[in-house]
Amino acid sequence: MSKMDKDFHDWLNTRCYGTYDGVDITPQTKLVSYTYVISVFVMTFRRSTRYYFKDVEKGKALGAKLLCILCNLTLGWWGIPWGPIWVIKETFCDLADSHSKMWGEIAGRPQEYASQGDGSVG
Image (cartoon, rainbow, N blue to C red; front, side):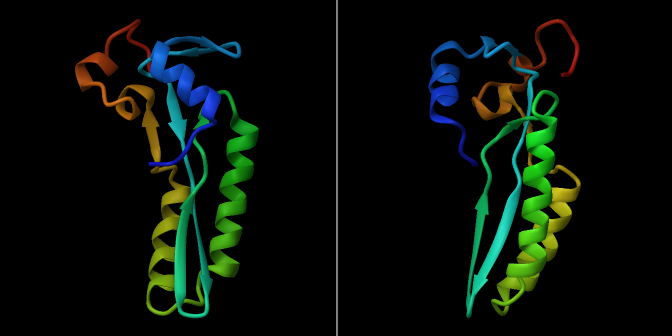
């Protein structure tokens, strides 16, 4: 799992939902993380960004997405065999926002809890 800002993570662990810095946090709140690949000689590393609010932090999330894709395409290829394999996989995952989750899933809540609320999906 990707990391979050420590203050945000601590707040979520104690409150689960409510308002944090003017953002309504519910089990349906969507968060997104991106993965980048870096190869050094024959070693290849995958790392993830922190989670971003998908609908609120659009600018920051887009910047992280573009930087991860650029990093993948320039620095990730060089480690054989995992560099090319992970670069292709993670670039497509980043483009499709496939590392997107709802807060209810990240918190380990059952799906029934994540679908409660006002019925809207953030």
